Length: 184
Picture 1 (cartoon, rainbow, N blue to C red):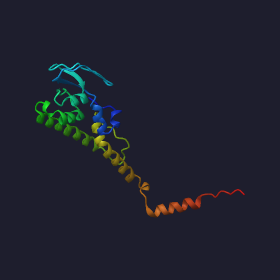
Picture 2 (picture 1 turned 120 degrees about the horizontal axis):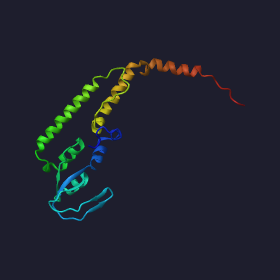
Picture 3 (picture 1 turned 120 degrees about the vertical axis):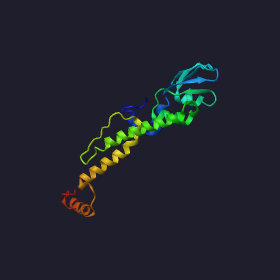
C-alpha cells in the first residue's frame, strides 16, 4: 500500500499522496484491441478485449471512458479508494457497502489516533504514533504541531510577549551595550 508507515511519504501533502498512489498497478479488462503503450513509467499492453491486463491506476482511469473496466484491487488505501469512488464507481461491486466499510475502518483508525493523542501533556516534546498511513499523518500533523507549540508556550511563560517586559528589555539592551570608539 502506498504510504503505509513510510517516513518519506509522510512528508507529502494529501494531493501529492493521491498523485503518487496513481502509480499503483491495477487490473483492467479492455473493451478494445490496441498495441502496447510504451510510456516513461513502463510498457503496458497489448490490450485485447476481455483479457485482463495490468496498468497503472492513472492509465486505467484514462482508459475507463468506454475503453475498459477497472477491477478494484484486493487492498485499497484511502487514496486509491477515493480515486476509484470518483472515477470507477460502476466497477466496484457493492459500492455502498465498500464505502461504508472503508469509512468504518477510517473511524477506527482515527479513534486509535485520538487515544494516542490523549497522552499529550505539557511535558510532551516528541510525538511518535506507530502504524499510521501517510494520509493519516498529513491529517493529524497540523493539529499536533499547533498543540505542541501551545504546550511549549504555556509551559514557558517567558516566551509569551508581555508589553511591559518587551519595552524594558529593549531599553536594557540599548543601555547595556558597550559603545565602540569611532575612528578618526
